[in-house]
Image (cartoon, rainbow, N blue to C red; front, side, top):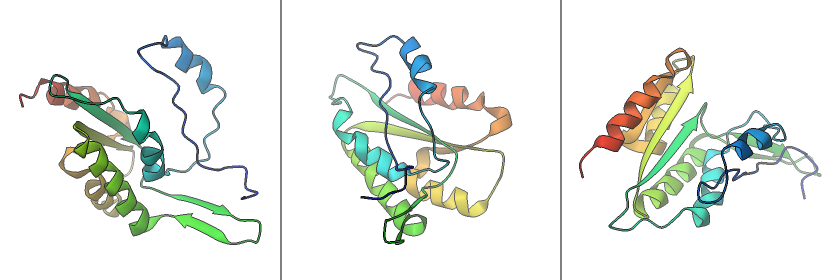
Length: 154
């Protein structure tokens, strides 16, 4: 097992069917992000927790990210395991397709202060047409696009 103490993890800190939102506020102080974005790994880890979507329900999966998939760690024998680049983008796209296939509409936001064309291309590949690029100084545009998506007629 890797000796590195910064392994990717997923926290489901809030279940609207049984938790108050104050639970999220209380839990955030205990989380220690490792400055990585293991996006596809996180999506894969929550698949079995997503509620089923049927013909009577609209399901929306909303993702907010600050980068493209990246996570590296060193094993005890000094081997570096990398989850980055094309391989990580393809893996993330595969997970997004699973979410779409289960009946969800996916809307994903890349929130950043910087406009890097490669990041935009990769993000569009991973999340498709419903990906949006949001400048960190214009975060209110998330509400505008969410509103538009939620008001769309099927």
